[in-house]
Image (cartoon, rainbow, N blue to C red; front, side, top):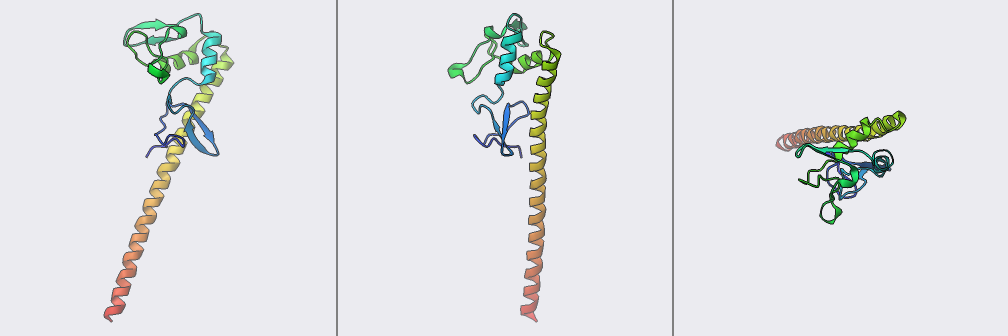
Length: 158
């Protein structure tokens, strides 16, 4: 089973932008779980506004951030204006490698993203382990109930 968002109950993917509150994970924006974080958007505007930040692999074209399209009702952002492909992960990869960002900022951005992915993985492992423990407890309970029923039936026939 996948870890679910505590706000929208949808599964949380490793590529989703998450937050943690009281040990519970949720999407930062449930309508757009894979969009850039506000911090990532700030970095793009501050350091990368004058050059291409995304390449659409479908169209083989590069775009500056302000050239990217947004979908109907703003549910999707960072889309290729030509074919509509989501290039969010491409922008994020650019941020992690752009030489115009100070190296310390790049390292910290990677660390934050890595920590979020680690948290999702760790939550998934804990959930998987708890499922195994529940199944083991249910099997043990079933076995004990069967043994109890056998003992009761043995007593009534004696």
